[in-house]
Structures are given as structure tokens and as C-alpha cells.
Amino acid sequence: MPGSDIKEQLNELAAHLEEHLSDSLIAIEWERDELVLRAQRQTLITVMTFLKDDSKCLFRTLVDLCGVDYPEEEFRFEVVYNLLSLKRNMRIRVKVRTDAETAVPSLTNLFLSAEWNEREAWDMYGIFFSDHPDLRRLLTDYGFDGHPLRKDFPLTGYVEVRYDDVQKRVVYDSVKLTQEFRTFDFLSPWEGAENGMAALNDGTVKPEEGAG
View: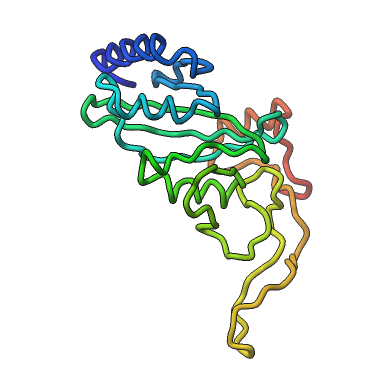
């Protein structure tokens, strides 16, 4: 939780942003005492440029960006940007929503760190970033099928990769499960006796058949 001085700074910043960016923002919100901006996709560059260059902001560091998948919603992907102002000793979070077909403007011309972070978001979620200089996979293989952090991506993936000592190369095989998926719905020792027994007693967790 931020101290009173930081909270006062953030309140002043929120008022400043409301004055100058109201047409470019969907909302200015507080989440766990942290300032969060919900930006329109079309005005993201305007918002980020203001946050970086305005004398009362000076958020010059893009700490990271990541994706979140809400598959039931119309705009299923949320891109979350975490910014830091060393000059003002403040942090701010910016969120923008998009779908699987609509690109989000790339921030590579504003923040150098955006290049690899956007590549990771593309690789893991399939989020497009327009005007990115090199939007290709970062963590998965070149021929990888799908985007593994999407909620609808199968837990086992589509193929398994191994080194074939006979062929002396990496080969791809269909996934072969040694056993079917199981539901381990029983009392967990990590929950502690009190919490675990409460879950069993109120019926929210049922012991596995044959367990005990």
C-alpha cells in the first residue's frame, strides 16, 4: 500500500490526467491503491506519449507488458502495461482491450523494451501489434501451432518434442498420454487442516473415490 505522500501524488496525477486525457481514456480507476488507466485502443499512442513526456508524469520506463485472456468476452484480450517514473517515484498501469483480429498499436517507437515484450504477447496469446518491426515468436519454436497461454489451448499441447538419437535431430510426435486425465479433487495438505475440512464439510470439495 503506498504511503500518504505517494497516494496524494497519485490523486493529483489522476486529476491531471482527467483534465488532459479524458477524450482518450475510457476510465481512470483505483485497484488495490494503484492508479489504473483504461485506454482506447485507437488512442493508446496518444496516452502513452503523454505519460512519457508530460512534465508531471515522466513515465520513461516500461517495466513490462503482458496479456490476459477472457475468452467469453467480445474483446477477449487485455494488454496490461506497467510504467515507472523514476523522476516522480510513481508507478501507473494502463490497460487496453482487443480481440483476436484487431491489432494494438506497437509502442516500440516509444519504449525500447516494448519490442520483446510485444513479441512475447504475440507468441503466448496471438495478440497483434501494428507497426512492430519484427513480430515473430520469441519463446516457442518456429513451427509451433497455436498460442499456449490462451484459455482454449489444450493443456498437453498438440505435439511433443524430443531428440531422436538415431536420426540425430529433434523430432515432433503426436502427444501420447500414459494415462487419462484425472481429477484430483480431495483434501490438500497445502490448504491446512482447518481450511481443508471446512471445504469438505460445506460440500465445495469432495474426497476422491477410494481415497482415505
